[in-house]
Amino acid sequence: MNKIKIFFGFLLVISVAACTDWVDPSIPYSDFETGTYLRTLARTADVNFFNLDNAKFSVTVEAVDAEDGKTVREVEVFVKRRRGNSLSPEAKVATVPASAFQPHSIILRDIHPASGSKYPAATIEITIPQALQAMNMTKADINGGDFFEFRLSLTTTSGRVFSSENLSGDVQGGQYYASPFFYRVPVVCPSSLQGEYVATTTGTSTDPCCPGSTTVTGTIVTLTKTAPGAASYNISDWSAGLYVEWYGVPYNLPATHPRLVGVITDACGVISGSFDEPFQTRVTVTGSVNPATGVITYTWKNGYDDEATVVLTPK
Image 1 (tube, helix red, strand yellow):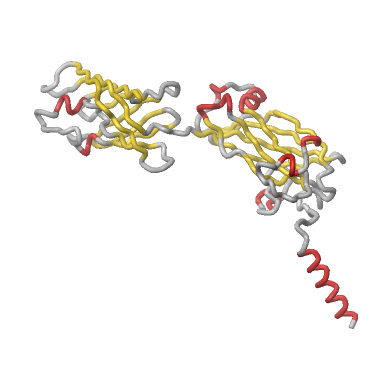
Image 2 (cartoon, rainbow, N blue to C red):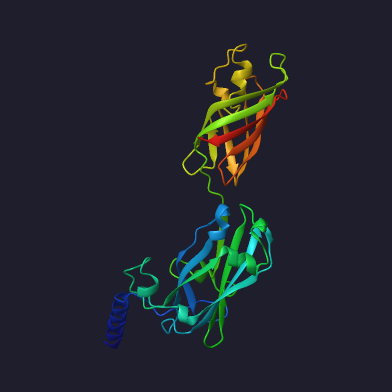
């Protein structure tokens, strides 16, 4: 009979626990049995290489501990730059006081307006100019494809420190904890070159039919994305009118010849491409985009050493 009472008492405890919408954290840190962690609620996805002056890192976290978030003394923010396997020295960029952690109704009205969490939350924002200054860098030190790596370090009122260096895999990557204390933010180069352009093209041919330098103006060249969100484009006439000018009559080369269509790639303003041309050689394209005007300038050269410079101005 006593065993039955104990068993039913155990079930009662389980049923009561199942009705609650939170649990007191038992944090499996490597150095502590329990502690304080920062659950990630929202964060920056990436940084626009072309708008570093106005870009920022932003993360919203809530402080979870056995005292409803009251053990937070401060959160320090550190940053470094990653380029491939190369890392800059880590630099401290900010200190967030405990007073920044406020009820969800204040911090999260635009993120989780119906949230009933009892733990306080804070939005930590670091502008990219702040991060660069902390690392003694300028915009010239950042390339597309780099990463900003931000690390949070939480100090409690008792002096304990929690960061990415002493947490377990459960806290770092678990769906419930979602508390990496570490955020790698890529520097990306959004590309929006699709549209019509008016071309000015100047080039030279090694063919006897077309001696000297030739300039063609007014050709309409169209760029279309190869896929939604891609940074590569189908170009309607990579020669920008020059092949038709040179070879249209003697070789009956129409402006719609399929081998005048190529694919170029925009890698953070650097234009490149390589594809077949109508006379069985390969064409290589190299150039750049002016971010202020949207003008694309590139050179192309085929296997016969015919070459040209093309300036595409948005129509």
